[in-house]
Length: 564
Image (cartoon, rainbow, N blue to C red; front, side, top):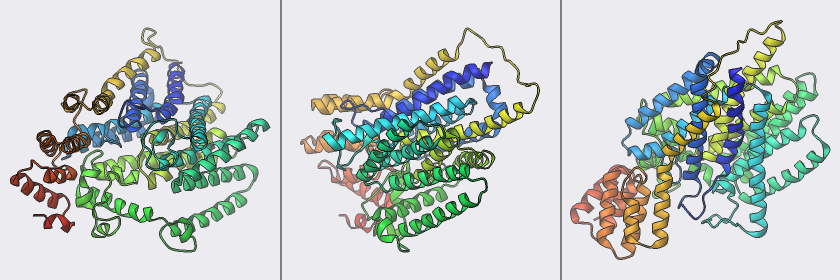
């Protein structure tokens, strides 16, 4: 059947592609070895999946998943609206800001991944996706163990002095290891798992917990603790005939969770153990994101444009903590990021994905009593990601698992309904669909992947040129790297870096050129105006304009009004 012909290559690409996105890095060739590379990998995988699914089985996708397709189309349309109505540069909206790369291309690619998972029906397909997650986790555990024991063999800048994994940040690796640990516990508790595998798994779990502790990432502790607690709930549900014990356990966990949440908010007996200053900082970042969405309710501020609006959207108390000159380019809450990017329409479309996946998880919980690794693994991985998304940034290597498990949960729940329907029917009504043998799914996937890399390679190519120019310490190469073209898109961050480099190396004319160019490229970028004000070659007119813009972009900060 055509569905099976499509599902096999799609499932294979998901099982290998999702972990590849999580672990893919480019070292010593780009200034950002993590985010721009993962965006390129995501684009390649997503367009490959989309080419096979949307060309080969669009009618089947629509027939089986109308609501999900409508939500995806709405999300894409509202994302485009956010881009077109944004005051931030088009390139920034499309590719995202430097060091984040969570612009339109990333969210469009994640939506394509979500749609592709909806065609899956075989238990083997879902199981292989979870195996892919475990494989990515094992690679990161091994990498973390090596780093702790012998030092990091990756020659990148690590200001944290903690393990980074393949995510470039201790918080992200902590959260991912929390997801990995939860799914691994689900695998080890699955009936029929061999004793030798369980012993090895326990050793790996111990190493994982030690690495989460080494990362000092609170979100790693929260995600792993909550995820494993949820796995135990499903195990108790499997072991006990009645719901009494599982619900008592769940209630106990909920009480502990409430006390932990109160502690995070500086209330209750767990405050000293749970609370960190970063929680208060996140509160201010969240409020700024809410203010952005409310000030642009229909269109938002644009994709990955939070940083351009943070100063003018923050509340007055943010000038006290985290402080007037402490800023961020993300809300540290994925839901609020989406709300800020596209206002209420985009937020509602995003919440539709969440609600549909949650409904599928609830149905599977009540319909299936047995401890099924696929069911428990998908539910736990999805919930763990959502917990991380509530308190952290949408890092691409983590986000891909949230969107994959979201679509997989819906597809798996649908597949259980089909299996039950066919088991009670004497004759299956499913029809065989003729297929065009000249165009195979594998061929379409290959063509789609080529399109994906063509679309995603410009910022990667530009970063490679920039890195080469810095290594050579050649002003001409820097100029070439900063010349806007398809393969070298403009970037506020690169303009800032170039301006500072030229100013520090006593090349004031070049510094002034790129300082001015940056303010023209993105007039909403506060740091561009602050740097222009400080340049040696800045004219009195430049400084006057820069002061006016700084006051406009950071209205609550009295510091700029005192400038001469």
